[in-house]
Length: 449
Ligand code: SF4
Image (tube, rainbow, N blue to C red):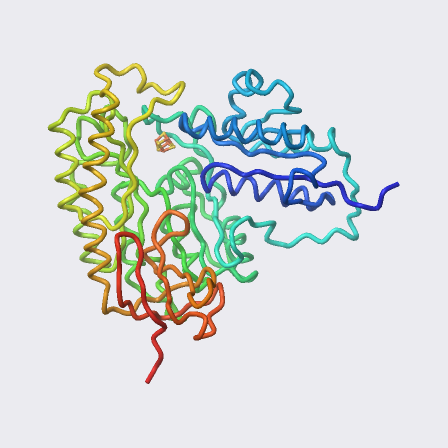
């Protein structure tokens, strides 16, 4: 019998939520004694965790499956695209098994069938916090699955089902373990972070001898006890979001903000009529007022948002309403997409589709308008000192992020004397900002005199 462990290759596509699924599957594979390998050649079988959210993600996922079949031959497919097995089988009839998101059991059954485990529970070493695909010093913390909304452009609820919140003590214990394992930044993710706990009626649970409701604010209060950065993603502008803003202006015992002054809040549009067609959750009429109020409470708050331009029925006047909103809201970071129909979304049935060339033209105007705003906001930071978290060293430079920068989606802070200052990934450092461009900041370590 061979002494070598069976070897699994893993391809992870899609959003941070899919990344968390990948981490869980990888952890289970390690528990059962599988080695995770980096090349198709080394792998006995390959798992592809797919994304199926928009058409380009479907194509990317199908290409990744095709490549794995061509290079290795034994391929197990899971993730969002797994909800459409016929589409996968049509393109790649040779896949061994197909399962949907969070279906860890089916993935493991398929791996066992293709490659029996060589399990020795006494010898297998499993890190307590699981296998993480992200660098050691930051981690995604998934607080719920599914979504109760039915935005007309989105098929996530039909793929992932209604909201199911994790009990708050469970989430806080995971966060505590991650912090003890060296994680310095937690990225809270879900489909709708502000809805956390609605499904369990905000059930109270106990952590560290104190009662916490399964609710966004209580979760943030618990996480603030850990003394590391906590960043909230996918927050919808419900009224109770206002309750967490004061935490962003408070500092905890070790001088860290209790909650990073950062909100990732996908507004998607500014025209009430378009938002209605999109069936977006949250009050929309007072958005600007609320953004101003948040800034008066937490002046450093960075607001990131995403928008869709060219939604079916969007008129030129409604598009201009969106541009006006950008001017007034002065958001820090903005992502935008030209509307692209998603197979199975109800928005496909809406009349007055916007022609492709008009969509692209609007997208270009939108991005141009926001580029000026983002550049001016970054320029205003020149001359300030920003607390940053170092991600990596690159020659003389240290690559870091300020509180306003989420990994992968926002900008970076390049620290010119990072190597000389002896910085290491995962370290916090105060940086004097000396320059900026449209996306990034440039500076030097601020030494005390
Ligand atoms: S809130 Fe809307 S866009 Fe987000 S997952 Fe739910 S249905 Fe989709």
